[in-house]
Length: 267
Image (cartoon, rainbow, N blue to C red; front, side, top):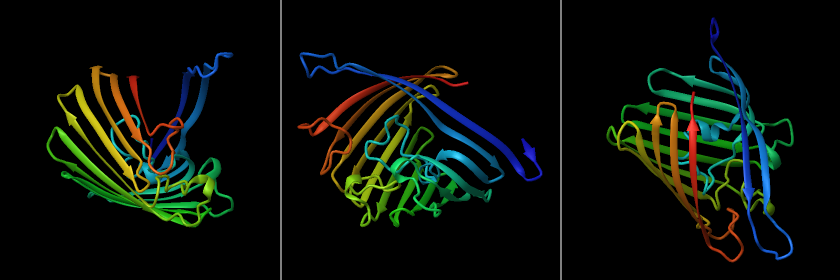
């Protein structure tokens, strides 16, 4: 809705998930279980460039997440769920910026009246974009940042590379040196990926990620638009743990592989 103060927008998204877990480690009991989850992922109001409500952190949204794969957090690149008060500025010439005051979530929720703070700038042109974001964790007084380069190599091929660096001197042991923003292992991490469009309906997407703790993630998928509004995506994911087992790989194992088949209806 257009107003004298700018465009008025409202967005909300609730996700309903069901999963079942099969295990056979005991001859006495059936360990298979079901897991039902409901989550409110987005619930915000925006007037002009000012947004207030439940969102995902600008540390991730403004920089464009980490590729077009489903499982893009094999090496995590930042926390998501948070309440925000943020302002987005678009100059109309390719330059944009954001400032976001954030609450965090779970153990990383702010513990005083001082919010977490995220700031970012972006330059977008026909060849691609370069984006930088920096965050301040008010709980632990730690700083993290990421820089991302996107390149439209051809009409069919797009590439990206992103690097992150964060301090962790004040992060507590049970978090394994990971906070709301610097969730990768060690101080630095890197993510890279590509998308190749075979035609208007079919695309191939890949992402590789690695951090200082030697955690390695590889994800690749093929997405196919059967008809307008219906997309099927088949993905394979691989992760190899480094110095710390952050990904939940079973004890005694160094790596894991999995697959995802997604049917998505958009309307």
